[in-house]
Image 1 (tube, rainbow, N blue to C red):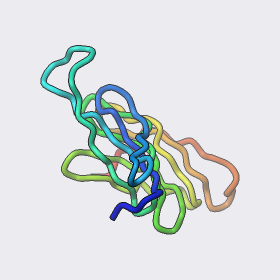
Image 2: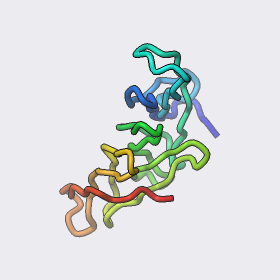
Image 3: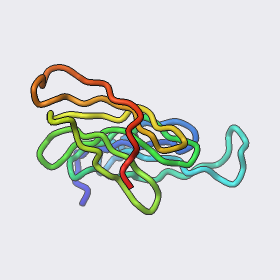
Length: 135
């Protein structure tokens, strides 16, 4: 359920990743699905990626397959990395024991690169790479 004042991210599939400021729900994650044409300025459509149950999400990267990674708030107020694909939706990639993580890149094999705070060192980020996405 979208509420006024919520913030969500969006990704521009095959173009860029980002955030859209929806007037009724605040910024939300969205991809622009590729059209049949591969022209540089081909017509795209915006798809709301949703959240992991919190009020914000931000897309960081999109691969050639249209799969999106980023970060989203959870109902507990934490920030978790996510992986999104059409038909599957947003999948929580979790953390390395801390309360925050974020996915920054995804390749065409769906290997995700990102960062996470750990339980032992809540103030420091640990970079992680080559982790396969869920699903």
